[in-house]
Length: 73
Image (cartoon, rainbow, N blue to C red):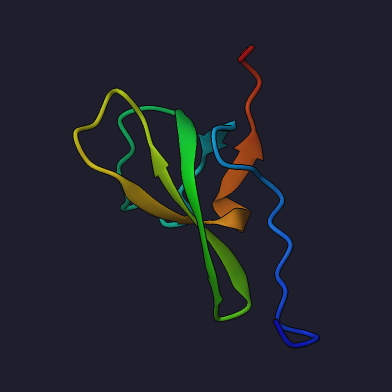
């Protein structure tokens, strides 16, 4: 990988995070999500694939929408 291309993600695969959507119109049926994979940076934001057991689908979230979970892992 060339210098300057590396992107250090704040969260790791398997880590539990709180998802706080930045858009008020984006419903979230739960707050705690599990990081499934790290995605490439887009528009200067690191992206993550996340999932909660309360939903049947996965989400793509920006790092700015995620917080370290307050519940024990």
